[in-house]
Length: 72
Image 1: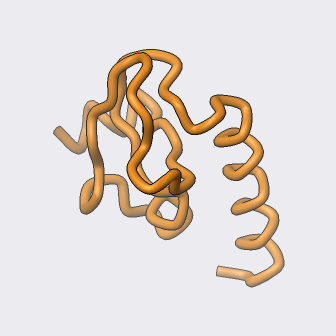
Image 2: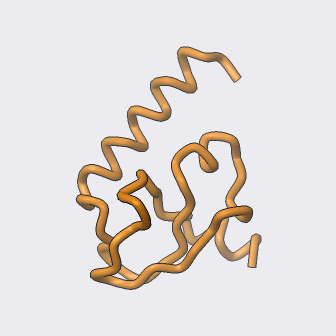
Image 3: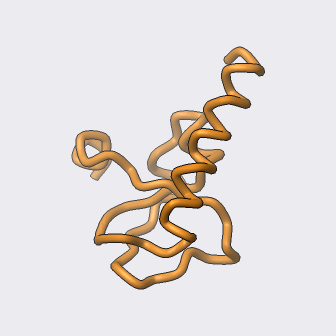
């Protein structure tokens, strides 16, 4: 993957993470941003509920429902 594109994608994911302030806004599966960039939606996937804090304040991103359905 192009390094510049990967960097921009990571910044976009970081922005998404900042919006939720590191706390889940609803039930769903989340993965670390780095995994999402590498198209890995299964290895470190975890389910979080509203109000749960992400471990170690790492940036996580919600797995889109259409991806989550295929990786169950």
